[in-house]
Length: 108
Ligand SMILES: [Zn+2]
Image 1: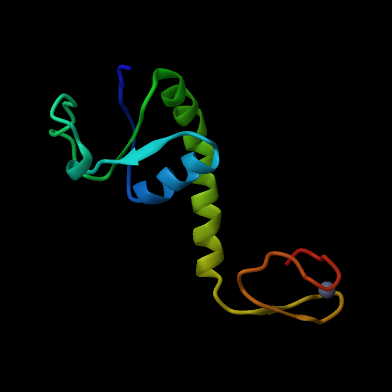
Image 2: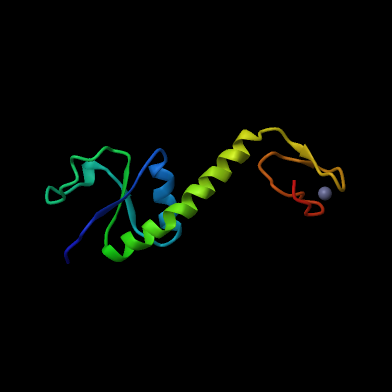
C-alpha cells in the first residue's frame, strides 16, 4: 500500500493541531525524523509541521484549520482571563476556566 503524505499545517502549535485532527479521526503526524522513511522527501521543511497520510485526509484537515485556530484563540482568551469570577445572578464563585456558572448556567 502506497502512503502519500501531505503537509497541512505549519505554526506555533503543531502538537495541538495534531491532537485536534486525531479527535476528528484524521491520522496526523508531527514531523518526526526518527519515524521518517527515506522515501518521504520532507527533510527540507521546518520541524513545526503537521502531516497527514492521504489526499482525502489532507482536504479534511485543511477545512478544519479555521476551526482549530478559533478554538485556540478562545482557549488563549480563557487563559488570559485567569482570575475567578462571581456569577452575577446567584453570586456563585466560579473558577477561571469555566465560561458559565455551574450553579445556574449564566454565562460569564
Ligand atoms: Zn449563577
